[in-house]
Length: 342
Image (cartoon, rainbow, N blue to C red):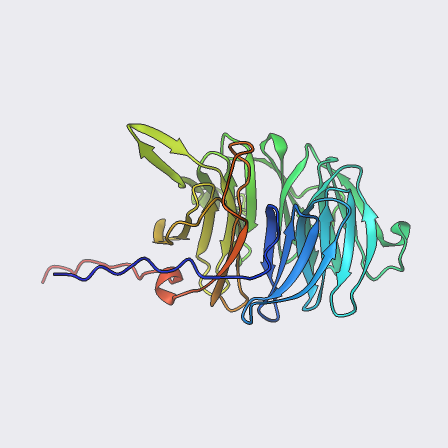
């Protein structure tokens, strides 16, 4: 008789989690520090390995995104329309600038030395954080978008901007005067998340309707023939398909495979090249709102946080789980070729 293994624990739960919805979490490029933004108006810095809260900054409104600058400082995007620099090592912050509506996304480009923000005011702004304090001196440029910005992703000098209305703009950060490519999402429903492939050849885009599209920047016929989309984060119940939003995509830094998190509470790991699901983690207490792999791919941070897709209702408390990643969960399996006949 085979022994039944209990499903692995969802990971170590971090103490002192945010007290409201978790909008994003990100690992540092230098350590196991984890930056977390929340609707409770805070940005928190944790040491994920030591399970310690290293610092916390209050904002004037919900914080919709955050990113690192270096190991002890970062930037935040808030619903109070501000873009802030936060320095945990000195306990100080300053306002880089403002949008005319809530700031939904923020990225720091190491290549350009700039902060890039996307807002519901239908603009993208680039900031130079080295500028002296004062919005005029830090703002590099404002770039109108077709609709409200929902998600941003960077790889090298390439920036992908996903907006409402299923628009996708691709920019070269060295020439922001106009998009390099103007695209439309291959998916029929609202975009939830976009993330560039670590190798820089394209991006994955997820929608509210349980699907992910795999796209390529190269417009040649051969490259475009490789694009595809697949269904995920859905279940059949009494003959009906129940479909969940795919809130989060995170690429593994070593293997280039990726995890998706959905409102069904599941995290799946995919091998995009071989079009296979590698792993499904046991269910989290509520929606998976955000995901991030650590710089070496050994840890995966999971935000288990209800995203109000079914309106206001009683829900599990917001929590951050940090799980150790086993190679078998994320490493592509070699293709097995049948033995040629003798």
